[in-house]
Every structure is written in C-alpha cells, then in structure tokens.
Length: 413
Image (cartoon, rainbow, N blue to C red; front, side, top):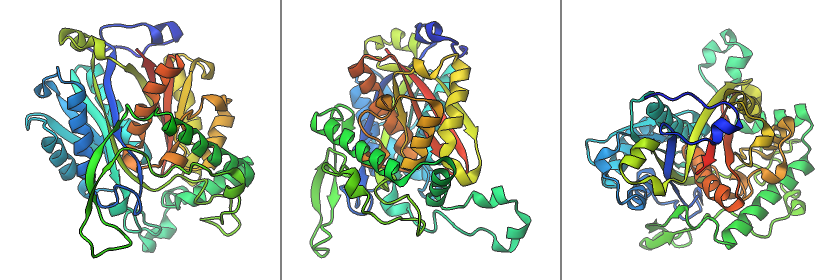
C-alpha cells in the first residue's frame, strides 16, 4: 500500500505502519585505489562480503523473503550486473531473489536505496536491499571517463552538452572561481575532514558499521612474492596529522593556477555498502521491529549546469526540504559528499547550514569516494551518528557528474 511523503516536522517524526524502515546499514572499509588494502580485491568480492554481513546482521529474516536487491555501480563492466548478481548468490541469497544495478554516477548508492524505498512505498516490494559497490583500482581511468566524445559532431552540440564530459576537477575550479571559495578555505575544510575522521576512527565510531573483509594483497615492494592474506577493518586514506598549512603546499591538480589539489579533493577509492529496508508493518509481522535503526523519508534529485556540477546539493536539498515541509534548521546531521572542498563548502554556505553539523566524522576527502558505494556509505555513517548525537533527522546529499544533485532524508528510530 502506497504511503504519502510526510509534510512538516510532526509528520516526519510520526511513526506509521507504512514507514520504510532500515534494519541494518553496513559497509566495508574504504581503501585507497591502487595503494590500499583492497587494491588486489574485486568489486564482487567487496559486495559479497557486505551482503553476507547484511544477512548475518538479520539472522531472524528468511533471505527468501527479500524481494529485490538494487546496487549502485558506476565503472564496473556491464554496469556491474554480472559481478553484482554473482556476489549476491555467493553471499547466500537464494537465486529466487532478483537483482539489478543502477548508475546515477556519484549518487548511485543513494539512488539504489531510494529505488528500494520507492518500491516499498508503491507496494511492489515488502523487503529489499539497496547499496553500492565500486573498485576504482580496477575500473577507473581514461576509458571510463572520456574527455572527447564524438569529435566530428562537436560543433553541432550545445556548450552545456559538451560540458557533460568536462573533467570533474575543472568543474571544481569553476565553482571556486564563480562563488569565491578560496584555496585557503578549501585547505582548511579538507584538513578538518581528516581531523574529524581521525578522531572518529581512533574512538571506534566506525567499528560497528564496518564489515571486516579478508582478501589477498600483493606487496608492491616485492611483486614476485605470493600474495598475503590480510583482513581489512579500517579506512586507510585518513591522514591523522595533516594540517591546513601542509595542505597549502600541494600543487594544483587540474589547472596550473587552480585551487583544487589532491589534498582538498575526494580520494579515488575501493569499497561497498548495503542497507536492508522493509515496510514497518512487515518488520512487525516478522518480529523484527526491535532491530529497526531508522527510516527513509524521501529523496529529491535536481539538475544544474554541467560545468559547475558540484553545486548539486545546493539545488537538491531545497527541493527535498520543500517536499517534506521542513527547513535547514530541522536537520540535525548532514552527510554532504566531499567530491571537492570547493563544492561542499559552496553548498553549505549557500544553504546556510551550520558547518558543525556537516560530516561530523569526516567525509570523502578523508574517507574516500568509491563512486557507486558512496551514498550507501554515507547512510552507514549517518545512522550511528544520529543515535550518538541524539538527533532525529539526517540528510545524505551529493553532487553528480554531468550536472545534478541528490538528497535523501532519514530519521532515527
């Protein structure tokens, strides 16, 4: 049975049988592409581990009752369809459970969770899994991200159409130049992301959401040696002692006189994440209501100019808030993806968001940005933070290549 989107704070916080609730939200560690703990792993290996952990975290749920699995995947061959289905079956899901992938670039993980939520809201599903996987070590590069497309037709395409393949780093420079985000601002923001992530990791705040993954690792210093077996339990891109001053010594990465660097941009990463969703009435019927961690309320997506795609959160978040009848002040925790410090800072300032509420445990600059998995990773970080901080409402948002933004709202149980 379909349920309307709540409007207003009272309605958003009110519980009902048609709520789309979340019973678990887990992720692998996020590791540095080509250097980190997952450099020799495979995307389906990461996804299989997080899907298996999802079943383990919900032992009283018969896996055959899961209606569908939707996984965000950007760079994998065939959209990750075969790799993902293989991972799902290997993880212990019956072959009767269907599977699909979705690609909305950097928002793919959130888009997958949203698709499951919409399926439940529409009455097409009762139980579903949404998440994402990305192995940028194996799949990221010039073939995946073209800079010239159909050159013989270039003159017939509008500038906006051509800008859809503008390198992301240049869109970051556009945002910084057009909206006055200085290099110093970006370096301070980036250093703070690492400091927050470092404090969170040392305090063990990520431990409950991270699924340990045992995999093979080839020593780059001794490439002829057989692989070692390692178990990855922590994000490995966090720089524990970085400062804004140190950030300031890095050279521009995308433009000779630019402000975006390897330090104040998101890391290229490997990782996977998944969440289990169902209708509240289904959870109650199955005796699982005590395991509910939160619920999905609504998601909004909005377009913007491709050459400043980073402003996406600044257009998607107002649309989301309008849908549900809330204001910026009603949101207690914001997970805004740090594709680049320039665009994250712009979005926060444009919307008047309290920076203390943004990425309290660090963001993609420190943790990493495995494209298809990031939205689901953000949810895995958000729900425990809502619980810790006693806040009720959180928002996950990100910019999207080619000029879009997405934002999803979640409520603590």
